[in-house]
Image 1: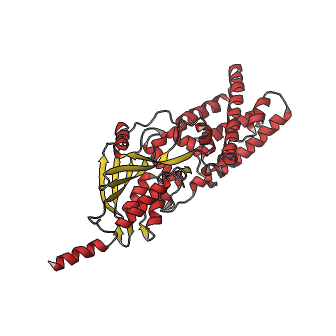
Image 2 (image 1 turned 30 degrees about the vertical axis):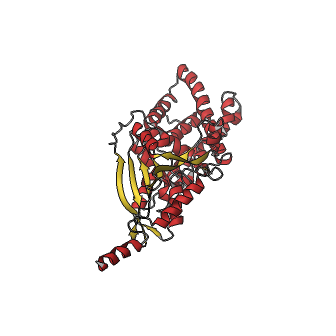
Image 3 (image 1 turned 120 degrees about the vertical axis):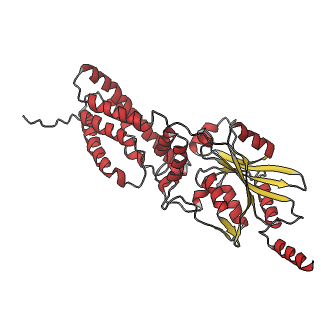
Length: 386
């Protein structure tokens, strides 16, 4: 009997083994599956804290923001929107995801009573009014990375096995994984334009945990003092994801068709096509110029880390914006401008796949249209053989 008592005592001494009877705390990572809306495409993470002694069961959520703020859109665009920690009941949390038909996986953390108390103290400290707000960053400081950081501070000897799907994976690779799965080619197109070359950085195992699913994989693959970080894993809400049909009109198909139409009708000598291209050229180069101005603003005028060093400015030239208003002024400098744009765009086409940023494949058609219309507007005449 004494031997049995000693064995049980030794098992409970280890801070990473099963919790003792005196430990009333149970802390779990909750990982929510992606939703249909763009903001929920990448899923969500939160911590659940259950206290059997106090009879409480609450959620600590770092992904809350004030949608009622009158400056919400201004702050969001400029990258100054503050997110904050909120505390909610497990019932409310579950009802929301049940309504949205999204699954929830729970991973109970294998921590000692002391570690659980330290983690709870840190959560409550972060939830105080003076501490709860933080400037959100999608890749480096979000509702998921905050939970990773808490565990890293708590468990100094935390080790994680490789969770990367392939060597040399980038932030953009992982983001594309979710957008492709959610059949959101237009969102992918927009993100590829707005986010710059920093998104193509080769990321580490730790950096991959900016996404909820990869934090889940990271916790599953983590250990402290050779003991698994996850004690138990359960599915709280299980929903089978329905496979979404691939949209017929993707950026690639739409811009591909537009490119072919521009190619054919640019050399179709009819009065109707000339009138059409007056409207088209003005609209096309005006939009390119406006887009270039937007990319410059997102780079220099906002706090969005991933919008800086955006090489999409190489084809969306802000110079097109003022030039569009002089397209039909019959000034010689306009022809010279488009002659420069023509040769510059041909050089860009040659270097397209060598540049240190991924470009959405559909943008090749945009560059093609720039080349065709610049050729026409520069009034370059190819010699004809007789």
